[in-house]
Length: 213
Image (spheres, helix red, strand yellow):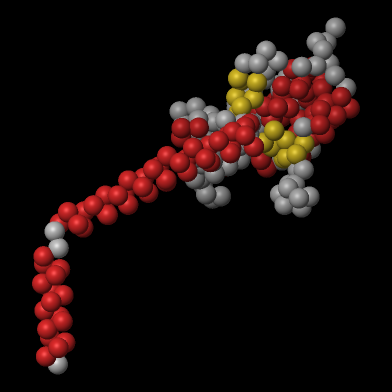
């Protein structure tokens, strides 16, 4: 018992006599080393790998026109209202549609009259642009998403607008549907997700067609 008390007293005396410098030095050294690894080396490594393996995605999946000028990103939608173009999913972001700095949904519940009025107005706009089209309007053409930035639409939404775009541009419906086929993205691994079409890329393909004589 006396030996144990003596050992405990010696340990306490040794701890009390340990200089503060002896505790700070390893702590500061560890802090500097970890800061260099996690704050410098690791970010540089991951950035380098991303630029080498996935350069397009690492730089924002930018979309360029024929002249090489950046006109958008394949990850963020844009507002199209001209009947000559395909229209994407509505956006509820403020103060403008597809505002990437204010990604949000409308947060309107199914029983909210404001949602009913918004959907009704969007349906009327689609009908006015294509009066002869009596097909059911795909839901993603009249409802906003949770992000408000959707760059893609369903294949049904693209097919719904094909006849209008073909008529306004003086093209055949077959030509327009061929472009839709070329810009349709299939489900990942063949079964995860739904076929979808990037609106900006499809409209760029449309604009690249020879002008109507």
